[in-house]
Image 1 (cartoon, rainbow, N blue to C red):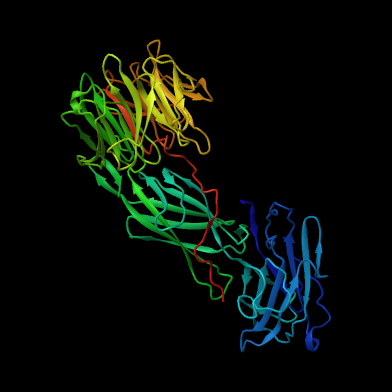
Image 2: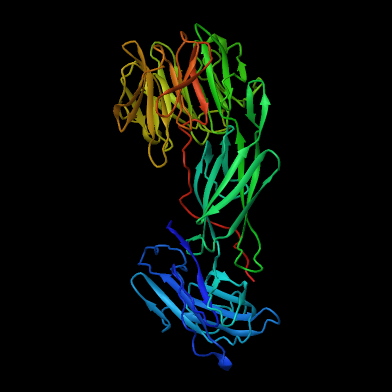
Amino acid sequence: MRTARIAIALFVGAGLAACGGGGGGSSLPASPGGAHGAPAMALRIVIPASSAGAPAAKRAQFVPASTKSIVYTIASVTGANLVEGPNFTNVATSPDCVASPAATTCNINVPAAITSSGSYTVTVAAYDAAQSASCVPEATPACSGTLISLSNLPKQITVGSPVPVSVTLGGIPVYFQPVALTGLSSGNASPSSTNGFTMYGTGKVSGIFELLDAHQEIITDPGAPQASVSVTPAGSLAATVGESGGVYTLTLTPGTTTSAEGPVVQTGTYTVTLSVTQPQIVGSTAMSVPLSVRVAHSAVYAASCSSTCTAVYGFFDGNTTPGMTFATATMRGNSELPLATDLYGNLYVGDATAGTVTEYAPAPDTTPSPVGTISGVIPAALTVDDGAHVYVENCLSCGTSPSYAVQVYDPAAFGSPASTLALPSEAVSISVDQQGGLYTLGSGASSVSYYPQLTSIPSGISLPIAASAIAIGMQSTPGTAGQLWDIGSVSGVGEIDAIASGTFGAQTITTGVGAAATDLALDGAGNIYAANGAATPALTVFDSGGSPTGTLSVPGPTNVTVVPSANQYTANKSSQTPIPIASAIPTP
């Protein structure tokens, strides 16, 4: 269960000092005497209350609510002579522990035989079970329950000093909790050598994460583990990690190189390894959390077509000069070219003249070669979901009684469709959401048909839309069906519309939209790209608020697609389930 953060801390006083905890300290007279008449020590611990089924509120200088016993020893550093313990206090039964609705406070008098000032190893451990006999933390005789926090650092104790000795318990991380990815990226940052995320373009990406103890309590300051980061191979991806209040931020900055059109990222796959140590534990070793991070180009692709198509243009990593133009002989026989992309950066081009959908892996300053082909189709529209499944709107029988269907092809299995959904009429544009729903826009239709999970519904679920819409696009949102957009013209004026909850006109953009607009695409940052048609020599770019921000020079753009595409991409991605760490920090 995700909860608020918790700090784990306690204070130990020696000589004439007592200790404070739970957010404050106090100076109290020492106990009359310990062994051999030596001044006693006072150990004060505050444990927040928790209710059944709910975690406790987490506050600074409190140990975890799951604490059921405290085990402690004190030994001289020189010669390691034991001056107290091992001893324990069971929170529920000890007369030293007094419960209130907010917290349980334990004031433990420790009759330690400390007669001279010096360095002492003070070991204090919190367990989630009561103890029945004397035990030694992480040694023999073993303690009952799971160790959730520990400190065993040497402390300087001065007999007669009124200053408390501070002991901060270090939380033992058992789970890695991804919280969010910010920046243009896709994936979820789960730790493994093969899982992770992809970052696009030249911008920085930050991964936010937390470390949890055995009870999935968030470990925070004071007592949070320290983290460092390394990247393999080194050189092209810079990484830093910082922590504040138990929240860790991993920041990744891709390297760039200069191309003819401007700076572009150095693509590649990297292993980013987070190394976690606990500075409150002497002898603890580093724990590694590997992430696989792929750096890819962000891209905008547009087909330039008038009476026939001349080329597909590619713009990489925010540059406004094309880094790629290409076309095949059969492409030039079409009046438009349906385009789509996947989250890996591959481009799919529909060619009705050739009867194919061809997959390319474009890169700046190169002419792409085919890496896969779907044959025997007459594609009128394309889309790709976040699993790289390719959806092709196909004319199955193009005669006097034509029949149409959306056929779905699995990645790298283009021989035959994995599934087929018959349509009542031709669709001029299709899109998918992250819940497996398919949206189709018919030629001249005034509504979009929705097919959940590719279920064949005779007329789908109609969503109101402009009567003159020519294309649709989906902008995914985590946990929802997402936001559907359309583009077309109304009374000779180009228009882009957002459709929220089936209501037409939730947001309308007209400024900068070509009167003969033919297609739109949305990227992961919320930008909108409008293909203004054969009569307009530019592709218009809008920000997430609908304001024009610039143009990309493409003669007569008729089709457009982007990487990462908003129907596949979700911002602020997170893993809702804490992920067990392969090996917790070893303790002495």
